[in-house]
Image (cartoon, rainbow, N blue to C red):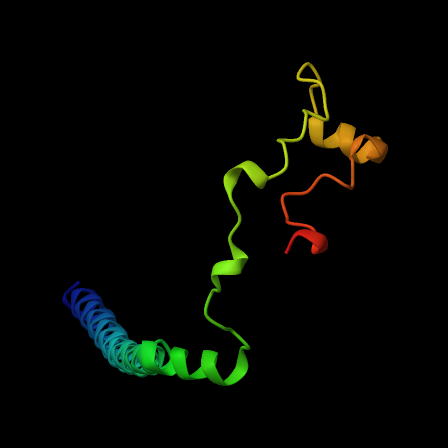
Length: 127
C-alpha cells in the first residue's frame, strides 16, 4: 500500500513539474512575442513620424507656390474677363419633366433633349 502511494506521489510530482515547465515555456514565449510586438509598434511609430515629416515638407505653402509658378501657366485675372449680370444667358428650361422618376436615366435614354448651345460661358464673339 505504501509503495502504491509513493508511486502515485512521484507520478503526481512529475506531472506537476511538467505542468510548471509548460507554463514557464508559454510565459517565456509570450514575453518574446510581446517584445516583438513592441518593437514592431516602435518601428511603425517611427515610420509614421517620418511620413508625417515628409508630408509636412510636401505640403508647405511655399513649395506648392513654387511648383505652381514653375508648372502652371496661371496669370492674374484681368478686368476684361468679367461680364455684367444682365449679359449672362437666360437660365435653361427644365429639360426633364419633374414627374419623371429617374431624370438622369431619361437624359441618358434621350440625349436629344439636351440643347448643346445653352451654356453658361461667354461666346468667343463677346469677349
